[in-house]
Image (cartoon, rainbow, N blue to C red; front, top):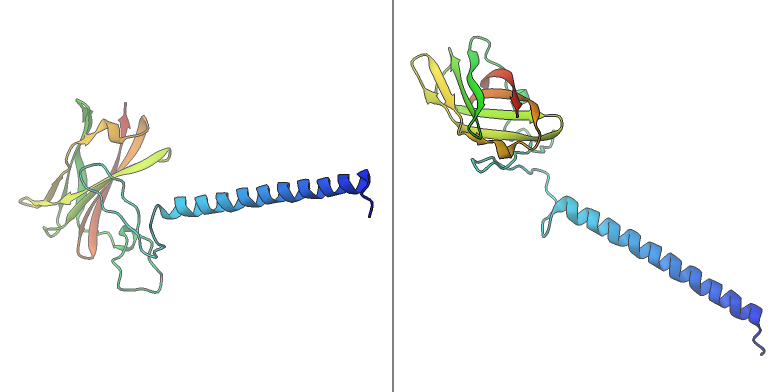
Length: 180
């Protein structure tokens, strides 16, 4: 059998095409694997209910992902009815000495619940603080720990949503603060 240059060049072209296709396949598989790992995080497994709680160290809270057919889960804040007879009011909301200060009250409502303050801006991750309510003569007072300016990743207007939640009722108030 005689090997000519034409057969030899066709063989090289086939090898080149195979190598290029192999590289493209390898890149696609690697990209898919990296996207999957990034979505789940290192050494984690998929879950249908993931949530984090916020503590005073500034961690961000994520809304739990709950199956629609599971009635044993706690309702989200949107599912808790607002107590129409109660009055929630943000009393102190200012930025001073490197911190954002917050205080609110809710009246005509039972005492003992939880206070949540969410600072939100469409250009940044929300900053959420949850803490215990303090009973006063006519309802509750919520004094949030000071929030460092460094927790706000964006300068500008932030919507501050205050929620006092007790059992199956909530009182809410909302204001805007400009982080400078």
